[in-house]
Image (cartoon, rainbow, N blue to C red; front, side, top):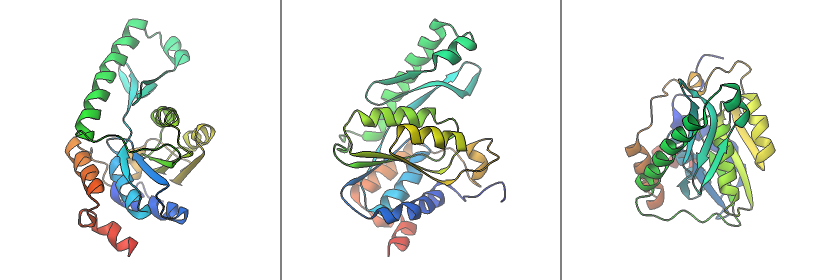
Length: 229
């Protein structure tokens, strides 16, 4: 296997959607993407399943000086998860942790406003929620997302990603009702290594994809339309 397995997030989403398509196309499903990188993947999945797409905003709480390492995560609906053991081991002060938490709360609220553009969240009570991201490294953000969505009363929660570390997949299977991963490579240094194009998804792209999904405009996603034909 080469260093990359997916051309970009949209192609990864189509491959993930093909695996999920045997679930069928039903009004029972809701696809929630984690912004920003999970939204292009989720857009393709939602198109293949004929399901509504919405956003589940999650923010990783990065370790000071090593922001790629998660010491916790927060999610829409007031969910806050902190790894107390890691915080103690790294001697992160309470003041530092609270400062990071406050900063990420502000960013989460900003993204909620920016992405929803006044639209209410899609109703998930009694439905099967498919939570989508572009990949899982530690699984901290996705675990927070599962916790947040669980509070909204879905019938079931399935985590679905193109690529994940084996440990993250195993962990998510403990908290979700299912976890679908296209790839779980033995050698896993990071999500980006499995994409030829892993350029940052912009806020504008997130808004455009969510608007296209709400409007059910197949012209916005010709590749999905071909696959569905």
